[in-house]
View 1 (spheres, one colour):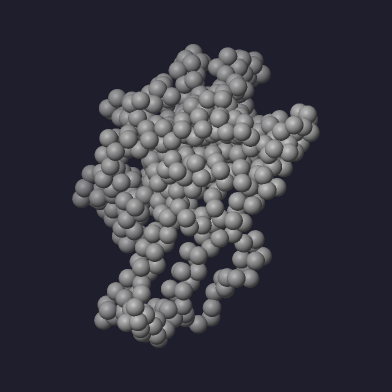
View 2: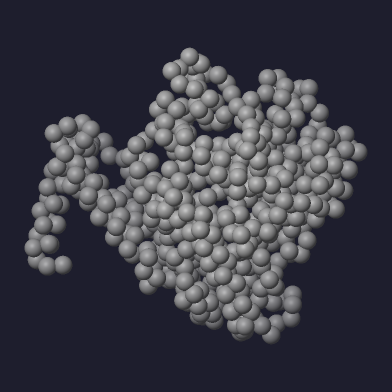
Length: 511
């Protein structure tokens, strides 16, 4: 940066120090030049951040303990207005300490990466700042959501005329939509009078399913104790025979089994339940089949790998989070329903101040009455614009490449001393493993297990301190703490995976 550029930056900063929120639009209609300068300054900060997070040599995290970070940040709300230069400095400070989830060496969560097409979609969405409840105020986005829901249902495998759905604030709420819709489908009077005339209902879900299924049971009044966990096999898949045993036992105990949740990609192991076999049991006992494919739904875009979710077309409802495998920006989740009109029947409250029936257009396009929310964020545009940019083929290539990266990583750590896989051949993008330092490898099993439980947390602490990479860990049943590697970021390369393997060794041997 030369002297003239430095001088210009200093002049802009001094200018902004004397400008406040009421000097720019919308309060100052003649303040366009200041408005433009301010917004461009924010964009410059974001562009610098984007450039940095895509450089693998930058830190993933600038970690500080909560008390340390509180001391560094001024989070107080002031009495008097803050000048625009201080606002820009606040933005810069936030970016400085925020975890860089778009970094190619961030493997900590199911949702990683920063898709720039989706990002500009979110920018546009924020600028338009509209609600999704009526066609009247959101005509393009309502039509767009309808089209994307139709496309996703078609990909699942449902026939035309049996496709419905809604975008919701995350997979937990999508699962809640499914449970509520299932109950209404079988016991519609619940909507009016509650559970007073309803028999004791029983739900069933994999013991490795997301906790939100049990949460939904609590929220709709069925009760957590009436949501029965079904054992899984050594690969983390629900055992269909155990499901049928639990259904029979529940009936014997006076319950009415009505809902089964199969998982399309479990959170820890990435396991896909045997949906066809589960669907057979649901058909036999007249139960609603829901597939929570929040994590694994994107696999349906790959002809090579969609067999993992075989049978999903037999589901009554599906949760699919494009903000996970597809890489749309948070949040972006859809609850898909194979019963057209059911969401309206289940959730409609006929608020006359919003959903008048004498509007000058087809009011069936007012989607707000099939949602449990009133105000609803536009989560579809960032997905639509990203899907338009990549097309079906682009997404198929993205999914296939991630699966190739996961296979590469798995095969490499099998050959690397100190690494031990939890599952020998993981089928999806979750690779769970222990790293066993040299001074632990010779110990007898009980002592080794006790030591291993402490290894992953200590490596993670060192990793966050150095900022070099991030990966999650957890125990599971009798297994001591192990790492859960998630490969879902399209920015990740083979070199990044090689670095990660060596970094775990470096940190592990320094304990």
